[in-house]
Length: 282
Image (cartoon, rainbow, N blue to C red; front, side, top):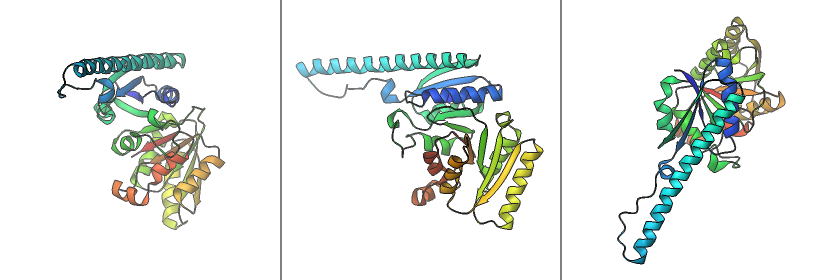
């Protein structure tokens, strides 16, 4: 069954991920699946069998192995409890159908296994290891955005009602995909949409933007358009703040990973800078 898949952990973003997933699930009329993935080191005890020891040191080694096993058991118990609490929160928010899954291993592998049944993936902006690191996106987030073929909703620190949407439109394929979603998905019904293009106001740019805006208007969306000069990450971040935007929609990574490492990435920069949720399409 297709669902909104919410990836949760023990970070301060977990509650917001659940609330954003509930918001999306209601609008899409879909159930929610809550997924938590423990890394292999967290889910299993350490293997100390290769060490050659004797006497008191052997006894100590056995005690350490027992502690490792107990720690892994407690982490799994804590994760199951957190998932049950998240499901209870979804029930309180009006989501009648929600399932939970606890896995060990690599997060991307677990997400890939569910890709065919995922209508929308909801993740936190930062993981539990980077709660307050303002320049850090979380060890998995960029990997997820680059790898996932499914739409991604990146939750902000706290949920707030969503009424105003800003689409960062550059005329590329992923931006066109975002336009298609804005036009057809019930996720965006009744929302006010601003279509912002950053660059020199050329005839081609105006034509591409106008075509996208017309498609949205034909779908019954409330749309305004703007073209502004400047650096995209700065102009878009400023527009988000000044216009009191509730959700930023954009395409993912227009350049290769190597190019992004050399000159930076507008996608990553905007995710870092914006204090609102970001929806990514590719």
